[in-house]
Length: 379
Image 1 (cartoon, rainbow, N blue to C red):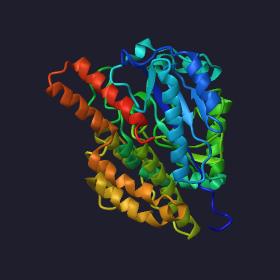
Image 2: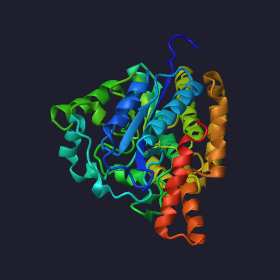
Image 3: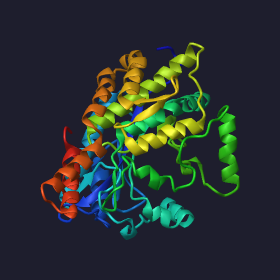
Image 4: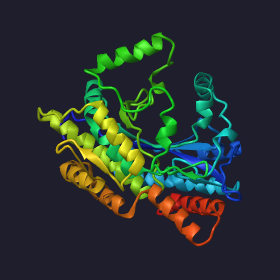
């Protein structure tokens, strides 16, 4: 690696829902001691409150490799699970709860969340969703803008591989990622804007700040954004993966694609730019079908299976993953379309329970039990 190359360090954030082990519903007002105990044991990593009291966020430390990030994320999942169990609760790594009612939720009493609630009103209470955010170390501002522009075409693929939110308030929505239909109700969400350079990006942010619309760039919630807190690009489109190996593999895919795009820039090349409208169409297909449908291949102007596009992408970034030391994790993404995402497994669990004569409510409880078990499996 030459001296000008970004560090490509890695950090993973996951937002869990805390559920009551007796009712299987979300814990509307979990004891504050859970957060305090987790925070005190997290070390260099973070465990934090989220917008709603039923949510808990974990952030790995800054990791030098994907295997290191996996170890830290596994530790945080175990820690959260062990502490929550002492209070009769459990975390689930899924982007929606199968039957929780958002009307019953209470907001966390912190200044940032109060600002969001004042601005967004009922939309903030409806935000009973969680995601996975992957930070990749890209310190140079101009390079972050260029890489964000180029990465946009891959965001729907990341979403399709991660889907874990098919149910909403007891209903099978027919979408593999219902989370995004909820979160897209927020302003300043969706695909990132395309910027000519960092000054162009700064002017946009300063306009919103000067107008009093946002306090800072942390109130920009695009699917990928330039982090306002860290020298990173933050990929935010993914649902939270119930299985940790899927989460880590998708993180490896994101890191490897960014390294590939950087390599093209270093060699004086650049990837193709595509209209936001076309990328947004693929985003919808990812929300609707996950891995079971297809995405538009812009090279051929046809819809191709997700597994085909993924295989082409994995081959394209194979050299980069090898340099980054995450080739095994990258290649594991190829298994996701075959075994299905968390959304696929949730639907299968529900349908199988119905076939066995369970009531719809009992079937949804079985889905929750599956999510509880899978969240800590292999950790």
